[in-house]
Image (tube, rainbow, N blue to C red):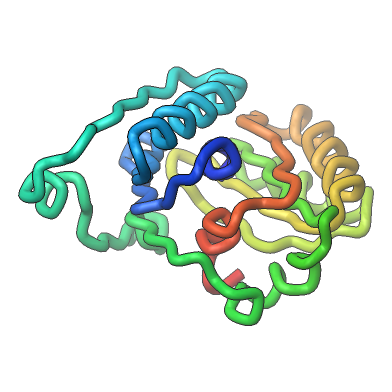
Length: 199
């Protein structure tokens, strides 16, 4: 989500698919003109590196039709273990079609989403509780990512989400492993569209 937001804010690109793999990685497939895609890839790569991972990027200029249709695009799959789809496709939603929890603040220039990712349920439960007690925020979703990794997504105004993420992040250390914590101010349309429909 964080890399996608950075990519969409860096250049005029559109999301094709996001796909989860079995080893906790995600591939984000975008399209646009070559210069825009290159700028977006560089922005996404830079922000992903701040999370301590080694992201890989690739730009395919004018992909061959058969390769694109039958190799690059993925058909929909559902993970029975995670109980969710692993191929996410996005068409930006109008505010009226967003998940109920995302609606109230999308028109606000100070709207933000916060993410706290942990390894372990006890740690994520404490993070959610601490975040909600620290500031006026709402929980949008809790997503299982496999391997014990869980991400909680909160929303509110930027200052509240920052305070909540800091409080949740601080609580995780004693109970589990903090994987990542981040705030996206004014999330892009495709980030909002990728929020779980049940959120």
